[in-house]
Image (cartoon, rainbow, N blue to C red):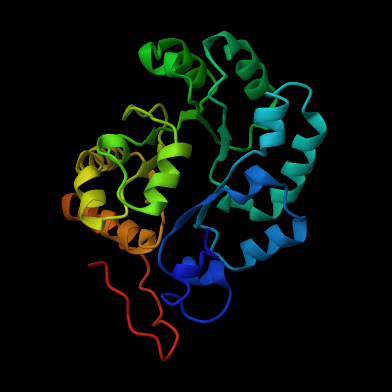
Length: 271
């Protein structure tokens, strides 16, 4: 994500992840969902970020979607070896499950979590609607394993029909997920999808600002990822979200101050 072309004029020259880390202090490791990177590549990510930076890598879809958490020892071993250089930056491992993975599969998930190394935190993202109709069994399972339920809030996005090419594409691909704001651990993780219109994205996240502030007051340490269909303004939006939370919780540390953009580019603004 840190290599997204529209972001590069915002970033100072140099390593892309290092530049991104001057804007935000966490990132989704979405690339690991599609393929396990080389260990040397991951070591490069670690070299570009401080140990406090949160990079939450997704377990490969080979494990979660193709093998459905069963007989996946070899691809899982390769993945865990590859991400080892991240050290504390891997603040959780992200288990994104397919929409067909439902309540009848909970025994499989429980066995998988029991088999995983205990030196990682785990977050599970589910997309089967029955989990949201009756969340109790999944909540109990995750709580037993000290794992978090990662919500993907798309309610603001699907509130009205799409108005851009990127929104129309996302309309066909993104899951229609309800808003869920119950934290199971001290490290909740949230994905929020807004619209390409920044004002609508900001309007849609208002409840998350209050929820996040409440978690901080409880002593939790949440990670919130802000998306839009084209993601062009995501860095600025993430910083604005952080500022709105900080207005309610002043003791929250500010995000790093970005280095100036590449000389010759006009500064980009949110509106």
